[in-house]
Image (tube, rainbow, N blue to C red; front, side):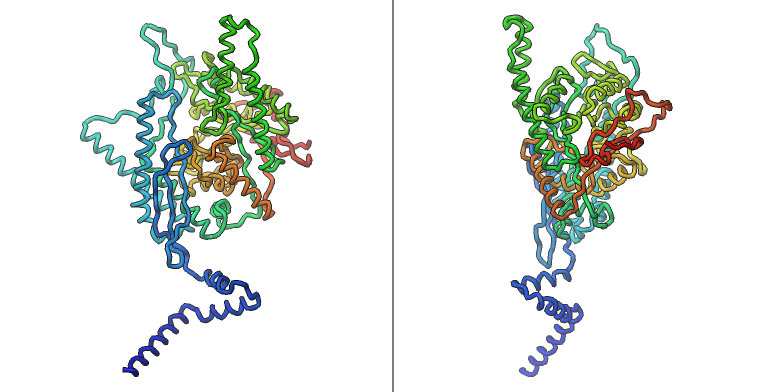
Length: 615
């Protein structure tokens, strides 16, 4: 018996020796000991573990966990948690919380709001089910570092779901024996548009036919799972590779070529959210853009300082006694307006900034100019303005015109003339977001020719649904300086990488934007830095879900500065060709000189590319 036991033991030892030898363990242990002995580390076994860990298998996804959570405005959204098998043990790697993007009009009916809330809940519940069942099974044993493969599988899964939905729709139509109603809203009765004229009243006929509104893209119930999973895998890949998410994204975009320098996007800090129910309807957001020579921290502090002074002036204006008699009708009306302005200025919108109504754009801009003057700052040198016009919310389809003020309408061509006059009078406005509807493509071309060399003309509404942006390696957006990209619904990390590459190739700028229903997840900031976005639009400097993103940018700036890889951003406006106007532009529309001055003064930072000069 002892002889047999000894023989089995010797056979087992030989088998073990062969097993370890086949895996190179003896040689690697010898190399490890020889390498570590001169170092004599304090934690020898810890250093041995670090040395040998590079020979371990690449972690793979073990499972995904989806759960329903709340976003920054208390609406349901999706959280995706990634678990991986790391050195034979399952570990929770990271999680992301998606931002929701469900647009409900301000003046929507109660039943519409209720229907939207029900749709939102159903969509999140479906997304949770997708993640916990189908996607978790589908991505098991896939490497989280292989973003391209993951996004390809997610895209195929989503396409399959869309086809299933279409088949169900066709089957239901066949059963009902009738066609489904068109999802294209009639040009004279858009959601939130003007009410139909009463019977007997004269109906206004548009002076000029305008392109009808494009149909609203239907969002597939559960599509949030695609975007959430793609981003969660990207974050897990960064964690496993032990690099920040922004660097991981940059490596994915540039085919693993490590960037020598990186720039931070310039922030568009929203300081005022203007109510569209006020007399002035043209302005939705007023944003501050710091000059490029300031650090991100300095620019943020300056923007906050200006906002505080602006709100102080707004409060003072609302408290001034009316020059008219207090008992007169006009005096009472004026005092009522001032009181409403004061109350509005103390409210904070979901964008993280004060809300107010305004009757006059020029008054608003002059007040902002005064706020800067009081802080010994000059608009156009020490700070710049951007205005989000959200023109798609202004169109009165019965008239074929934009309602910029209550009762004041302008045609698309008249809008261009108005913007030219506005930027001529206030040259510190260097960006207009959605100055026109996306359907007014000819007017987009015209306004870019008129203002593109001195002002960024940015499309946001046209880029809401990324799935419609790319057609045969071209961007399906109007002629513009750049677009605002938002990470929502079925958007994948690979989609953003591809789109920003196309924008870079066409000399258009990328702006990463924060959706209305923002979450406390700060991954959007890393996406913006890694993708090389020129601007980032995060909202105001209030509300935790928005401030946490500004804080993340501050941390990235410190990290890049410590690594000496932080490069100062430089911006150039785009000189668009005058296709319909071959003659030289008039002095009124001539390309402006540098708007964002270089600290050295030796080279312009923000100029029209066609015109070289120094300050």
